[in-house]
Length: 379
Image (cartoon, rainbow, N blue to C red):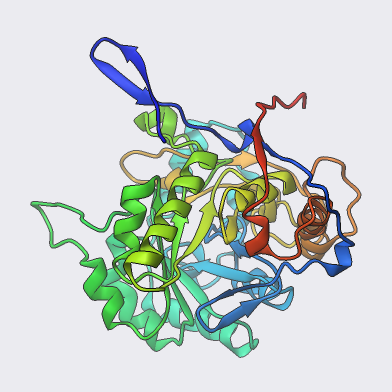
């Protein structure tokens, strides 16, 4: 049951919770971590961990997408990023990493807007996806809803396995007087590949996205470490409540559709292993990570992290932030860890949390007991 709180005489609101507000609770049973499975499967594609790398230029290049696949996860390439705008994006990445000012710098934002003003080249979309395919890993690429109609045929012809449509907020019913909106249901129905779409921030929008035929729904706004959406637009959806709401939509849609299961993928604001644990405990099937992977030594951002919102040409609502590096990508994901803050051995931490609370696989772990216990980091 949902309770609303009176904000004032003319407005009521619902209390919502972030991942920092919740914690998992051990049960009467514990397990050996080696007996715990963290395998995840969406459609016909199987993975050794429930981790999708966010399509952010600071985290994913063709090389790191390949590395993600070889390490057991799914790397998603940003098909509107530097890798599809420049034949050789390395000097551009070097320049972004070398911009002198720190976080929240108007000068850095202005320069990034200029760099991202270069046109997207269809032949580069083809060659980047071909590079990933030749490595023998699952191929995934992402477009925003605004560019999907323009480039999706190029993406499909290049041989993508999983198609991602990702924006700050994606709805099943976009209304515009200026252009023909993307008909998600018709679009997904006509594709032969599974589509992951989002972000969705609650039960109703997620349910409508599930009805379009999506294989997975992204929950949240993405770009947790870099976004200024709440400051710029006043829009925010605390992730713990959002995941639980969308998990409820998944349950109801499963009944409504006669058994069709849609995966819930938490997206944004999960910079440490404990956040991943709690996201799955709240009902996520997998997580989409940006900053956690941008900390890898191989990451294109070289210790800096930014999302697509950071260089929006009219209203940038993200930032280039210095997050540093913690070690090689394999160490970030599988360990061993040399950090106590949850920034490396992410999967080892997830497995240990599941073992400590007595659960043997991800689906079971979604039933773990949780408590409301707001946590404030002392870092």
